[in-house]
Length: 146
Image 1 (cartoon, rainbow, N blue to C red):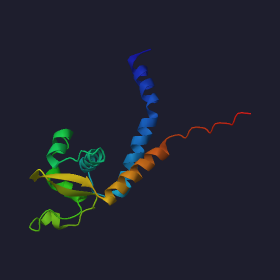
Image 2 (cartoon, rainbow, N blue to C red):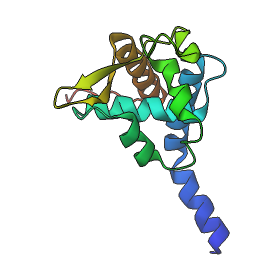
Image 3 (cartoon, rainbow, N blue to C red):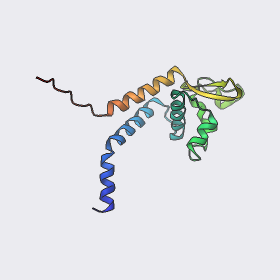
Image 4 (cartoon, rainbow, N blue to C red):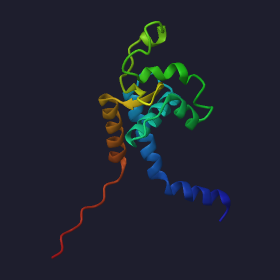
């Protein structure tokens, strides 16, 4: 068996994972504004995952976690997910955000702001997970023993 067919076999085993991933992308595309970028959605999902894990992230921790490819313009564009403008003088943040994330001060260091899911953000994540679960094949019901 050559390396190409082995790779193909390995990929075939992962079709279910690719189906789940493509389903998630479709749901995100339907829920987010048309011009939302992959970098922005990655940012949102990392923030959501951290908050759901009980360790809310900061912009800096997300920036560090996702690396340089996602960081290009996130310092201004992540505001699309916030529930309210950052400051009144900031023209970009005067536009209403999606309300999926909120910024909360770290009680130990008021310079640091945690990103947390709002109720609306939790609903978005729940819809995403429901879509992924719906894409998975259902196990056949077991027949009762006679």
